[in-house]
Image (cartoon, rainbow, N blue to C red):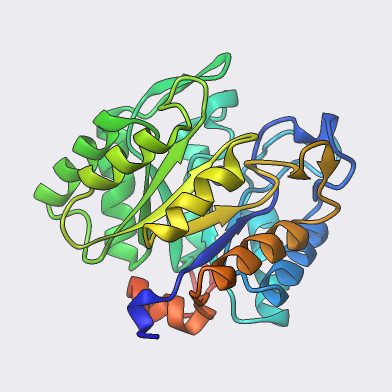
Length: 286
Ligand code: ZN
């Protein structure tokens, strides 16, 4: 199987929402977040999508010291790619500037939200000027952005960033389904969004809630990468809570193999996405 045909599995271990009210297995503290990421790597995840939470209140709290601890703990154990969120807490009132704090650690990969939208019962603010500022910062620092598209029009916003030469090839785009306020999780919507992708893009499919595994099955068959994890879905199957993020990764990896495909290792994911490598985390001053 050629390198580009391998599928990149991302694990989103904790997210920003109040999943801890529904499951006791959600990692909260930096060491728990790192530990679950590493165990997910052992099951085949190449990328960890990282949010941090206040260890006591559990609410999203983007703080550079929390990110640093998570990133260092992961790096000590394995070579998996770490993608920091820059959206974390956005729908829950965290300011745009605070959301960008982890970029000071020069991670190799970060999410980039391009649109303001209704997000459940909240509003997710992403002013066009702020989005451009974030994209410029990532470009200057060699941080690969993953553009998060929650609806049809968001793909057009990604194309505007391409026109402004703020994104480099391959264009990494996540198509996100099932967020209340975004495009619903249906198979026709997935195919439609796939058809809208800009040239030279490498899509990743994210689906929130109970349709996650059916949608990811289709995504895998269409050749897209897949994200699992408790940020998006806390159930392994109907009514059965996942006891770890590793269990969710194990399930998606099994599905990939069942359809005759292979998952990418972290170093293969770096080649596919043209990431700059594992030098993170380092502070801006050293
Ligand atoms: Zn996230």
